[in-house]
Amino acid sequence: MEKPPMSDATETPETGALRHVPLIAILLVAIVGAFTLRDYLSFDALAEHREALIAFRDAHYLLTALGFMAVYILIVAFSLPGATIATLTGGFLFGLFPGALLNITGATIGATAIFLAARWGMGAKLAAKMDASGGMAGHLKDAIRENELSVLFLIRLVPAVPFVVANIIPALVGVSLSRFVFTTFFGIIPGGVVYTWVGAGLGEVFARGETPNLGIIFEPQILGPILGLCALAALPIVIKAIRRKKDI
Image 1 (tube, one colour):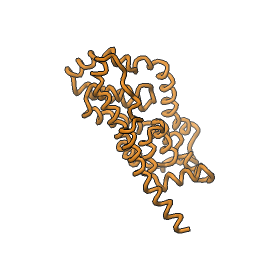
Image 2 (cartoon, one colour):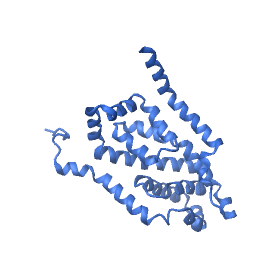
Image 3 (cartoon, rainbow, N blue to C red):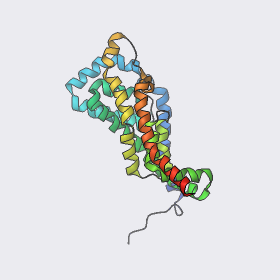
């Protein structure tokens, strides 16, 4: 007879500890990477090695594309420094397309790895505690559940929300994997396309001996459409709030 799956109530200390291994590994690698990789995943390093990267890309295009996406996934999954530089590199090596597709796909896969690690490590227990506790924590979870898609899109579209935070919070409130992947992929498209576009123009930036304008996403012509998408994502929340007031 097949044994039923082990519940949290019957979980042994050993299996409980194993649940935290992925999160601990991510944290340790992130700390080590912050000190050891900062000089390697930088704009100066890209400028220094740009000719070698272009030569390798021209000789092995498919291998370069796959290798680049694998590195991008690792950078995001382990919260290593250099995600912005990696996005610029995608545009520099592969242009706006397929550079944007490689960047967005790599970021989505890396984000999903963090999401799964957080959910497996503490998401289920924390979600149950939030349900039982009520108060602000319970209301927060209820609010996200009630407007799940809108909230998930908003935390992706708003540039002020740190990427790693937007990966972990959904895991802690019980968001499904499919909705997380869907909103992550489509929610990061605007920002991903902007920075890939900046990266695609790095050849001219290098020729002038300058550095790229990474604050371009906050300029009115870029930020305006993104805020418009944020307003569109928030519209269902506003409509529900208005209807609720009318029913009172």
